[in-house]
Length: 295
Ligand SMILES: [Zn+2]
Image 1 (tube, protein in one colour):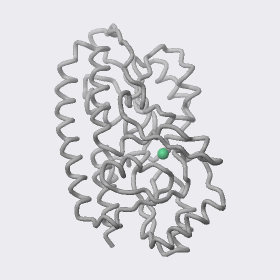
Image 2 (image 1 turned 135 degrees about the vertical axis):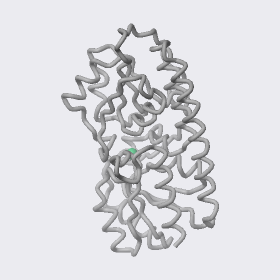
Image 3 (image 1 turned 90 degrees about the vertical axis):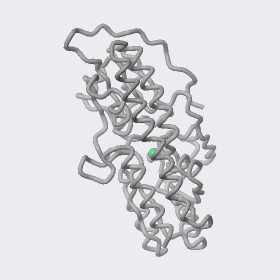
Image 4 (image 1 turned 60 degrees about the horizontal axis):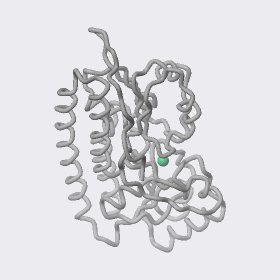
C-alpha cells in the first residue's frame, strides 16, 4: 500500500495575477494534473517526452522550478529513484505529494541479485486506469486546499476527466474481450505491466529485465531462461517501452521469431505522436497489445 493519507495543506497566499505554481515529475502525472488544474494553475512538468522516469536526473532548471514551486506532485514508490536525492533536499519548502496516496499497490518479491534491489511496491500504477482515478481525487483535494478560490473549477475539471477515465477503462476491458484467454500473455522489457495485467486479464510471463526498475541489469542466465521460455511457449511478441533500450529484446526476438512491439509505458509521446495524453497512451498500448497477441 502507498502512503495512506494526504499531508495537511494550508492555502498559499497568491497575488491577484498569480497562479499556483505546480510541478509534476513525469509527463504522465503532468498530463493528469493539467486536466484538473487547467488554466487556473501554472504547471511545469519536468520529464520531457521519451525520458525514462527511473533514470531521469534533475537538471539545473528543474531544480529552479522545484525550489520556486507551491506544490510538487510525484509518483513515489521509488519510481523517481535517480531524482530522489534532489527531492529530499529542496530549499523551497513546497509540499511533495505522491499521487499514489491510497492506491493499493502490487508487491514484487524478487529475491535474487538485481531483482532484490528493487523489491517492494510496484510503481507503475498508472497502467490500471482506476488507479489514475484515485490520482485525480488526490490532486483535486491538494489543489483545492492550496488554492481554495479555484476549488470549484478544480472540482468541475476533475469530474469531467473522471467521466473520460471511466469510459477509457470500459473501452480497455472491451478491447481485451476479443482475445482468447490462452493468448493473453505478456513478455515485457522490465516488470512494468503488472497493474495492466491484473486489471485487464493478462498474465506477465517474462521480462527482459526481471525487475521493477530499468536500472537493474539481467544476468546471462536470466536472459537464457527468458529466451528458452519465449521459444517453448511460442511467445509472439515482446512489448518494449519507448523509454527503454530495445537491443536485448531485439536480439531475443531475432533468435526466436518473436516480434518487438513498441508501447508507451514510462513516458507519453511528443504532441504529434500516438500517445500525447494519458488517455491516448492507454488506448494505443491496448490496441498494440491486442493486435500483436491476436496473430
Ligand atoms: Zn518502469
